[in-house]
Length: 79
Image (cartoon, rainbow, N blue to C red; front, side, top):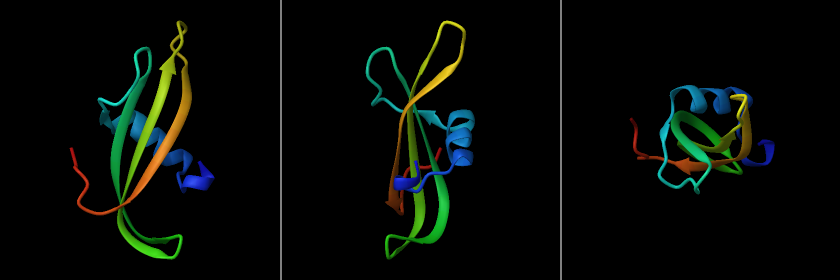
């Protein structure tokens, strides 16, 4: 998460408020959320950050985080 600039709060908000992504493989789930960013990441200024989280749900309803991805830019789709 740190390497991609994603906080635990962003993961939790993406899981709670994000919309389903159609990119998840069978047996897994994916959610995406766009955040206002207006910060510098790796030397460049970005207005928005799109966070995508892929995860599985166990039989006991626990969430297993598989990966989290970030894209930096602007004009992402907001829902």
